[in-house]
Image 1 (cartoon, rainbow, N blue to C red):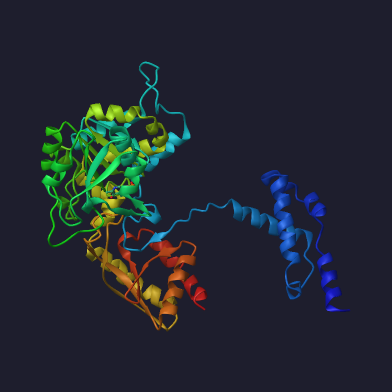
Image 2: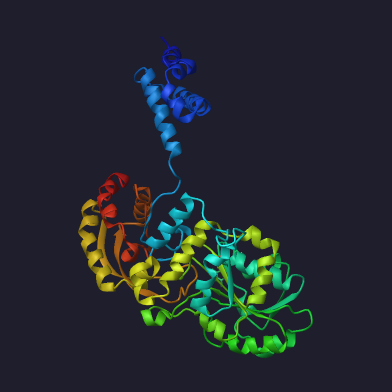
Amino acid sequence: MTIKEKDFDRRRLLPSVDKVLRHSGLLIQKWGRIRVTDCLRNELTRIRALPINDFRQEVTLDEIIKIVENRLLMSDESSFRRIINLSGIVLHTNLGRALLPKKAIEAVVSVASCPTNLEYDLKSGGRGERDHHVEQLICELTGVEAATVVNNNAAALLLVLNTLADQKEVPVSRGELVEIGGAFRIPDIMIRSGCKLVEIGTTNRTHLCDYESTINHRTALLLKVHTCNFRVEGFTAAVEENKLSVLAKQNGIPLVVDLGSGNLIDMDKLGLPREPIVSKAVTDGADIITFSGDKLLGGPQCGIISGRRDLINRIRKNPLKRALRPDKMIYAALAEVLKLYRNPCELEKELPTIRFLKRSVVEIEAQAKRLVPQLSAVLPDDYSVSADICNSQIGSGALPVENIPSYGLIVSAVNDARLIQLLNAFRKLPCPVVGRLSKGKLILDIRCMELETQFSTQLSELADLLK
Ligand SMILES: *Cc1c(COP(=O)(O)O)cnc(C)c1O
């Protein structure tokens, strides 16, 4: 018999589609005939294409049904995976930024599970306003008159500019025309909003007179963007909000401040790097302030637009608001997060973002040292592990120049290829671990390690992945 004939014979030993389907009642009940048939066809094609040597034995009917079942189960798995964030970036945009506090998660589950009075006034039985679930809280915590919420801070800026400055001019300092990340640039958003961007001053220095000489009858508002993700040092000048607000008032136009990672409390009091506080921008005279919900605030992804009631009312009436409005789960989570700020002393206990940022180096160090022998034990001899000081960052554009001392597992390898192999292996674990490379070493910053048992119990799988 030639190989070809043998090949042919073997493949004929596969059961037919019809025959398998006749015995797949349970699968069809669960996944439907179309999905089971598609999956079965794909599997049979795949098996037929296998090299002859892989056909060690006949594929039985039961085996093929099992294979199809496993495939279908796999395709039902969520594409979302839990990750252990040891990148040292507390608010990592690619890892979903802030983790919600328990109360917010419960509130999300609750509104997701039953009908709720999202936009329904229980007193009158008429239509309600979804913003009312959070507006009072925002006013109470920041001192603004009114507030509304959209999907993120980029949307907030878009909506504010489109409402207040469509077809009109908006002067912005050249030092504030920043790229936020993920190809999001302030100038691009401004142009899409319909306003005309007027660049003023220079990259490093912009003065009040630059604003003064630009303002004319076409000027809609003054925009100040908090340049959060970089710092210009040396010969610099920018105009403070309180001075800009006087100029804006003199000209009868509003001052809009995009705070980025807005902050409700004085981080200084928590011993954390300073970020501009929303209430400070209010007392400085800003008419509208926008900030993110899932940056330092530690809440769900959203953009908060706060400020003067007359302006917020106009913003709410913009049809774009409807296109940018968040879901009920966002409002439910945001309300619970905001309530935590009523008692700042409890924040570091209740709010994961603040808890991570406030963790003491001593505690992180102890955890890192505990994990060194566990990791060493599973790594091949050409790796070495130690615990050492490293730097965490807040992330999401908040003060990247400001490092927060932390402790990490530092792994070195005989060469770069081996190091990359380890980095990849960590990502292949059942609960993938994300670290960072720095100066030829892999750093696993322990600051955000909450799933320690999950981390250590899966370490043994590294050895296989590194073979
Ligand atoms: C982060 C940031 C944004 C965008 O906020 P998202 O909530 O990510 O859309 C806009 N402006 C500034 C200054 C920022 O820092």
